[in-house]
Figure 1 (cartoon, helix red, strand yellow):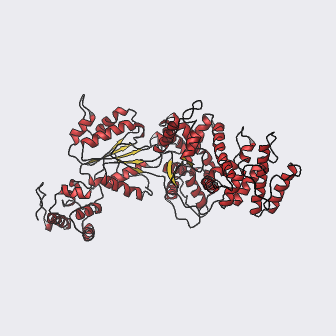
Figure 2 (cartoon, rainbow, N blue to C red):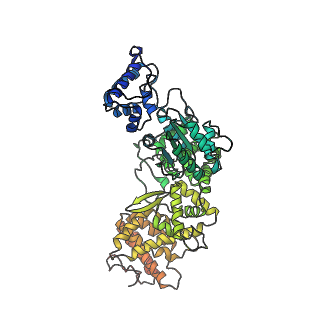
Length: 623
C-alpha cells in the first residue's frame, strides 16, 4: 500500500552507502504500513519531524527513535536493531546521540567539567515522561542536583525536537510578571511595544517542535505557572521541562521527584550511637554518594583514595550529609585541610564548615555555601512554615502527621494565638510541597521525615529565635506523654496498639532519654514514662538499650524527687523497679541488685515496687 500524501521525501541513492540503504528500508517499511508520519507520531510519542528525520538518510537515528519508528509500522525492532548496529560500525564517525551531532541546545552548554554520578533511574524516567507528557517538573530540595539532571535529560532527548532545546534560567529573576518576557528574550523572540510576550512567542514559534527547560522556578511559582499554562495552550509542539523546589501545580504537570544520592548500606550500628557511628562492611560496594564524594575529593586533594581504613568514615560523612550532592562536593574540598576523621567530627557545625571558603566560585551565590542554600528555602517559607520547620527539626526519627499537628499547633500561628488546625495542616503541607519534608506511608498513616541537614538548619534557626528551650519542652512532653500512656495501657486491650505506636518512635525516645533535659522540666515528666520504656524495650528486642536508658535516667535522678506529690515519688519508685528488671533481663545481676538496694535505702527499707517475681505493677501507679 502506498503512503498517504504528505511532503515528498528527498530521493536517496542506494549505491551511496549503508546509511542511505538503511533509510530507504525504513521508508519502505512505512509505505507498506500505509502511515503518515503524523499517524506514527500518535502511536510513538515522538514528533513527526523526528520520525521523518530517522528515514532522511543524513544520520543514524537513535535506538529509541528507531524502535518507536519500527513499532509504529508494526515491525519487529530486534531485526532492525541488528541492522542499525551494522550500519553504525560502517558509517565513519560516532553514531548520532539523541541531540543532533554538533548541535548544542541553547543554554545547556556543550561539556561538563566534572563527572555525572548515578541518576540512571531518573534519567530514564525523565525521558519517558517527556515522551508522554508536555510538562515535567523535577522537584527536590536545594542542592540535590535538579539543574544538572535536567540538563542531562534535555541533552538525551534533544533529538526528538526538530527545532531545538532552549534553557531559561530564572534564579536571578525577582519579578513574577517578567517570566514570559524572560523566556522570549532567551529564545530570541522580539516582543513589540504593548504586545503580550506569550502572544509574541506563540506567533514566532507556531508549528515548531521545541523543548523548553525552565530552571529554578520555586521563587516565581505564580509567574512560572501562568507562563507555562499560556505557552502550552498556544503552542501544541512545545514541551517543557522545569526544575523547582516546589511543584508548579499546573493541570498538565507531571512531577518527577529528585531524591538525594543513594547511601551505602549499614552493616551494623551501636543502638546507643549517633548516625556518625554507622559503619559499613569492608566489602560494601561504592554507593553513588560515596562515588561522588571520592571523585570530588580526589580532584581537590590529589592522592586521596577510599581505603579499607577510611571507608567507614567516608560512609558516615555521606550519611551525615544525607547524600546531597552539593554538600558532598563542598565537604570533599575540605579534605585539602582536614583528614576524613576530622571532617566527620566537625559536621556537627556543618553550616560553618561548608561555607563559602570551600565553594566553587563559578556557581550561583546560593550554591556557594550550604547555609545560603537553606537560607533561600527559608525565605520562601511562610511564617507558619518556618515555625513548623523549627519544631519538627527536633524529631530525629520522623513524626506522624497527627503528632506534628499537635506539636506545631501553637507554633504555626504564633505563641499568643490559639491553635488553628487548618493553618497547622497547611504549614506542614507547605513543608512537603517545598521539599523540606518527605511523606511516607506508615501502615496507612502519614509520617513526615526531614533530612538531617534540613533538621540541623531548623535547629540553628530555632536557637537564633531564642525558642530552643520552649520547643524542646513541647517536644519532650509530647513523646514522654506517649510513653506514659503506653505504660498505663499495660494489661489492657489497648496495650498492643500502644506498643506498636512506641516502636515507631524508638529514635525519638532514645534522643529524649539520652539528652540532658532542658531547664524547667519537672523530674516526674520522664520518670512517669519509665513503665512505657520497660514495655517498649522488652517487646521490641531492645532490653540492653532500655537498661542503658534507665541507668542514665536514674543517674540524673538518684533519689526520689523532693516533692510533696506522692505521685512523683511513686513514679521514681516505678523507674527504679523498671531499671532493675531490665538490668536483670540483660544479665547485669550486680547492677540490678544495686538498683533495688538504692530504692530500698531511699525509701527507708520499703520496696519501691514489686520485684520481678511479685505481682506485676499497676500501670496507673496505685497498689
